Length: 249
Length: 249
DNA sequence: CGGCGGTTTGATGTGACTCAAAAAGAGTGG
DNA sequence: CCACTCTTTTTGAGTCACATCAAACCGCCG
Image: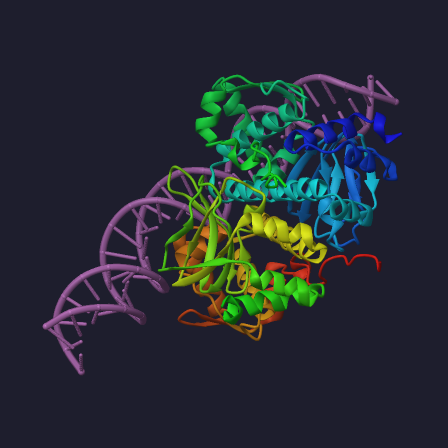
């Protein structure tokens, strides 16, 4: 059943592009039982501090991972499009140190953590693919840390837009120039460590300088070169080269 | 030979505490060839953009991982004591998206990436242990992102001190109250996303309020409770509970 | 048409930055 | 053990990028 999900196909396609999955490995994954859950906008899929619930593959929609502070401060750690496995770390971590919530109506497929773990131990190619996925996750966190720690407001926003453009292209959701960013400016602020007001002003500046255009939640990167140099974006940290392959056995 | 290294023992001890390693698994690791490299203070072990060189286990010393900006800005992503495996991600990633450098004279054992990868595929317990390690790494990045993005200067510094105190205790290097922090205030600034001057003033405030004392690079947490509430530190994100264990086979 | 989430604007405040120099340590060699 | 140098910490003064607060505006949907 889950075979027919667009998100699943996109996920498998991406995994396979990195390192070929044998038919058997793929079929074993497809045969895993998964619970389909749907959520409205701004619903928590996982709450900070909860026991992990399983590995969620975003079938449709858009989610973020975030952490909060007692004073109400919120830091979004990452965004995830359909086709991405979020909360893969719950394969091994028992407690969720961060929340996961939706930004638009979203459907996820929840796999049992032990199933995912077993899969990765039974099939080395799955082990590598999934481990690699979490390593790229970590690489993105490092880049975001640099973003919020050391870049100016306008660079932060530009950098985030370029990342989302790049990733939505990788997922086959856009041409890398025009993409849908299903988040409000408040969310953007929480991802960049800025206030909502200043995020708004940064976006206005990018528009005024002709670097981007926006139509509702559609973003068009008009001057990619300038955006890149402004934000010092380099896709290296997304590791498009893929994982190390096993030495031919 | 590497058996005798303090860092190796500490590493194995920590791995074993999380999930028991069979003797055979442990011995296989100990039999892996490793190159011992020594570095003076402030030397790069890995440079951003290089091909990954292998997995480095810190035998003695102290290192950080960092990213830089063309304008000279630097963001330290993490610190690592002796006994920690840094650059474990190079088992699967081919390009280093960040640098690694020393803060004091340091010795590392460099393992071949393919050996580590093979180890993790041959021994499920090693696979779990190493994957778990990278997941905790990522969890720490998320917390640091929150630190840098949303906490006040003084809270950031306090939070970092508590993390280092906690981790050095976990590694058996301190009692959790007094520990050696082998970094300058400039480095502290690069880790917290602050300027060196403001980092200095934040430290002075912590001292003036009696929350900490410092003697050179030795730090004493005097009022842990106040430090915790000031910085909202909670060790949950360090995942002391350890990894999910396999269902008894 | 009214309500509501989201965006935009304006005015004002401030936490943290920058620059520059002094003071304090730490290491080195005589 | 002192003189010298280099690094690190500390201090002071001035500035600015970004935050906060509050209100207006806008588009969408029921």
